[in-house]
Length: 57
Image (tube, rainbow, N blue to C red; front, side, top):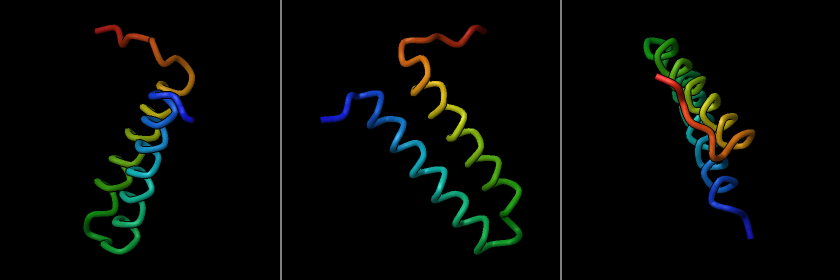
């Protein structure tokens, strides 16, 4: 059974894949959707590598 962090990172990566798909299908939205995907992938990395970490302001 996956941990909460593992589930969260999977959901984030799935969302990133969704944004990449939207980007491929809608050239006018490509830049914004790719940027969204990048953010979701970065957060997935944070959750996977340091699930209890904090973001400094």
